[in-house]
Amino acid sequence: MDDDDIREGLRAGDADRAFRLLADRYRAAVFRVCYAVIQNRAIAEEAMQETFAKAFRKRRRLASADSVKAYLLRIARNAALDVQRKAQRRRGLDRHHGDPEAPVVTAPSPGLEVAEVTALLDCLDTLEPATRTALLLHHWEERSWQEIAEVVKLPVDTIRMRAARVLRDLLTCLAGKGVAP
Image 1 (cartoon, rainbow, N blue to C red):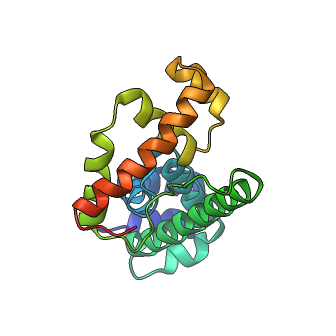
Image 2 (tube, rainbow, N blue to C red):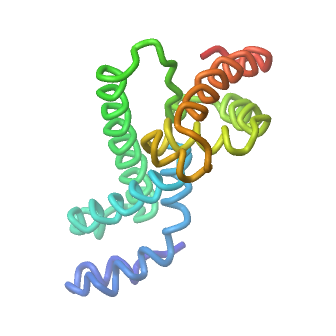
């Protein structure tokens, strides 16, 4: 696809119009890249917003790039990795101050193969819905157990106990699918 209209807008100083075109044209592709790295819709959307913010800051380079799309998707991948690293650092701090015995599920790493992600999603699909929701909210969206208890309408201790048991079951399920944690 020819992006001369975007380049022309950026060079002419009409950044608003150029970025509307850029976002309309590449929003879905940027989101797919971010989601492929992070595997979490909410965090991928955050990374997508960061991508367009970085692209705006680098608009001169974007205007002169050989491929606007390739340059933007490279920014998206890097933004997603940055957002993911920040989330992992936060989880690391939580683990350090929390229960050291509690197993932790993190968002899939950028190096995971499609088969590994598919196996994880298959294993998650076998879980009881309230427990799956609790697990995902806690480990991927970093919600507190109290918030989760209110969402799934179960006592906090019940949710924590189920989540701990389910993590062991997930590891067993993944091993059965040939995926080593």
